Image (cartoon, rainbow, N blue to C red; front, side, top):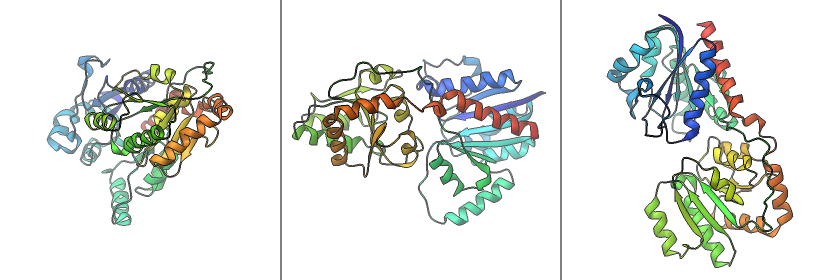
Length: 363
């Protein structure tokens, strides 16, 4: 029997989002140097996946809530190791995974939550049940928020001493300094799923306002979702010359390089906001909502402009503000990439590996 392994469960399809391939690969490399195996279970794999076919563990949506599937697919893998950490990255419904943790004996369950849940009914009662479940090893023993806001919400749901913050991070570029700043910023960029929660509708309505007011600005939208509805809105409001749909892109870098600024108008509670970090990395000021952990990714008034609240009017006003003060825009662009060291992906990987090794040592 082998000594130790980390079994990571990722609810993202390998090959579709570069970050979700790079991050587990780095974890596996670091653990391998320490004599610990890393095995990934993923929702699926597409043709761009870099993982070899013989290392793939397809984990369909809902699989971690299926006792038969767990018994046939996870239990045999875990049984090959003396010590195991099960690490779920939301958002399966993984309640039954606790049975496998309990059954193995020398196992622990880690959970990184990539969303911030709204408060529900009977919060205190649910928290009490979860804490009992943690004591019985039927619920995650260690929980990680990807922002301070995310960790604070987890403390409201689980035993606070079991919660830590490990920020989601990006691979930083070396010393990005924009030398091609426009005299007036006219090219806006949105990157994300085309869903109401990401603020796609107030964003588009803001560009109707900007068009009505004769503001010279364009918008490129990178992402998929409500494509047909968005196209219909663009056509109905005669925005074809102003708004371009680029669809889903596995490599977003060229779009950041061509943009003057980025808009992140989320209307739900963001756990963090990687687009906001990526924009800063490319030296781009950001117009952003203050929802959840998103505000933690910016220095208000220094690297970007906060929206309060997120409405078509406030988005349009922020665009006009950027354009009306070129000196301030240029200073924001210069400041954008500074102070991002804490968001380096290597820092995040090291933090997780320390948590794994500390727990495995104690098992």
